[in-house]
Amino acid sequence: MMQKFPMTVEGAEALKAEIHELKSVQRPAIIAAIAEAREHGDLKENAEYHAAREQQGFVEARLADYEARLSNAQIIDVKAIEPTGKVIFGTTITLLNLDSDDEVTYRIVGEHEANVKKGLLSVTSPIARALIGKEEGEEVRIETPGGVQLYEILTVEHL
Image 1 (cartoon, helix red, strand yellow):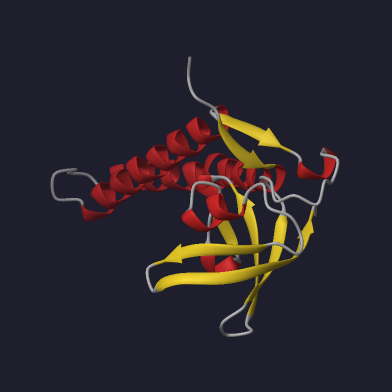
Image 2 (cartoon, helix red, strand yellow):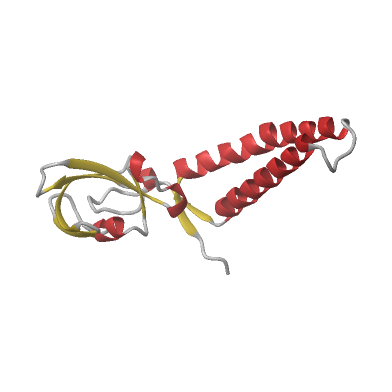
C-alpha cells in the first residue's frame, strides 16, 4: 500500500490549479509551438523544435509529479478539526523567541507545501516536530543550526 502524505486543503487546491494551468495553458501552447516548428522543415537543425520538445518534456514531468503528489495526499481540513489548543498538522502557531523577543508565525503543512519564507513549515521539520502536541503558553526548546532556541507558544490557531 502506498503511504499517504498529509496536505492542507489549500495545498491541494494550489496543486489542482497548477495541474489545470499545465494541462489547459502550457501543454496546448507547446503542442502549437512544436507543430509550427515542424513546418520549418529539417528537424535536425531546428532549434525551435528542439526547445519546444525539451519544454514539453519538462511540463509533462512536472504534471506527472504534481498528479502523483495529489494522488498520494491525505488532505486534512484543519477547520473541521475541533480546536484543542494543541499544535497539530495545519495549525498556525505564533512563537515568541525568549532570547531575542522576536515573534514568528508558522503554519505546519505537508512536505510539498513547505516554504519557510512564507511561514509554511514542513510537518517533518525539526521545528514542527518540536512543536506538535504542545499547547499555548508552553515553552519549547528547539534545536537549530545556530544552537538551542527557547520559544514560548503565544497562540495556536485553526485557520
